Image 1 (cartoon, one colour):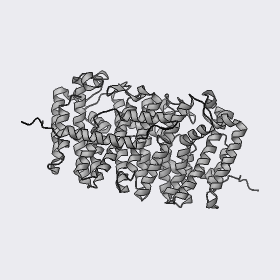
Image 2 (cartoon, each protein chain N blue to C red; image 1 turned 180 degrees about the vertical axis):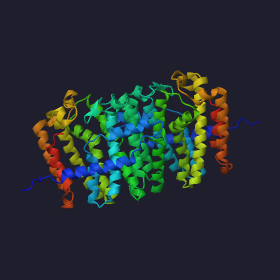
Image 3 (tube, chains in turn green, cyan; image 1 turned 45 degrees about the vertical axis):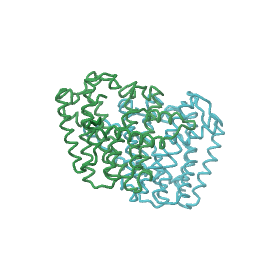
Image 4 (cartoon, rainbow over the protein chains, first blue to last red; image 1 turned 30 degrees about the vertical axis):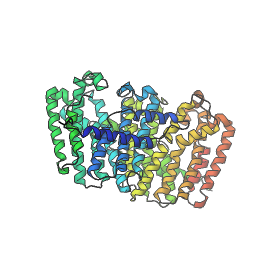
Length: 301
Length: 301
């Protein structure tokens, strides 16, 4: 009798992506040096803080569908991960979410100070584009420019930053399901979408394939968000590794507050099915991407 | 008898660059829209605040030396100006320099709030790279990637952000002339250097010409900084349009505190001569770039 569960390939794939991106991050992030070594230390502190490395996993697995050179996928994954890290560092600031802990240890502004955290976030955002512009990321400058354009769109004022802004005004008004979905699509969805689309761009696949990867990612992102909101309501801080019950406390509308716990669970299952269906054309490939969905539906942290 | 002074061409050239870059900024910055319109408003508030537009002037004038298409120079100037603006927005934050006024009106976090200012700065930094990656900035993707690489280096943890970091530790220790020069070279010099170098990159000039433009800019930047420090000591807040005497108050070492007022003035004159000499190979061209030096040596704001 096999001891392998139905998602046997997922954990090793997540682990592989995390190791690969961390090796690359070690190389691309400057080592502490000079009078300004504190900025390098803060950038590294924020980046090497564990975490699931879910976006690097998406980049690597999607890139594999298009036969992309692994070195190119790793650098692209590193760029997305430092950009994601910057967003966490700024999001945790006292003037934003004011969080003292992240993944069980002091947030960057707690471990250093607020000014250093602002600058470290700025430095991580800047180096994300520097990594992508480098010829080591792809021999074609057209491909590199496309990656940079799409990352800037996904992360910019009409992407992730716009989502953060909506999140701030959300506290002041009552949101319906459509507005909550828009908020999530911008705040977390767009970077997931780019993570998957990047594989197709690196593989110089056509627009239809780029769109297919975005579609998978958009649905996967919604499932990620709904299950995150469910954890906020149903989990303990110990299991989740971060403060829970914050949405309710701040009166923030989520898909869970709108549909209820059971309704949100059902919604997540439906969207997960659609995400898996988007991968059908890849046949036997993309197993780990498919397995991610049941994993998210049953996750405890 | 002519009423034209010796720097007659400078004011119109500065004016022309300011108008050109503001027209381009009007187009490239998103107009307020959607639930997140506050982020667009804050980005525009910070950007359309007057100011000398010195970096756009440098881009446009240096690009003209290499016969660059003006539309390309304008977009590159816009990218550098929004990046410069982001650095001011974050620098003014309470956890950084804590400034309430900038160019005689409330800083972004005063006109909006701290969280919006953090996000607006992030949005401006992000869009700087988006502008450069666009084919409208230059038909060659190789040239666009080169611009992005150099901007990221100039603005990143070993450039402008590194300079900000050194500025923070400068308050805690005593700096000599070399350390002050390094601080300035990173904090303000690198972006000046890239502004001038960008003209040569856009014109696909060789490394020697790129280096010549950087050399001019490095010296010009030092003159700019020394005269800025002199103003901090000798001007009134009314004339300078911002708080003065801040360096002394914070015990920060500057080239003025090290060399004295007369010594710093002499040093600025020597460096200005060297900057002008770097432009010799361009013969009659580059008059406005030359005229900038005597203008800086005698400026009152």
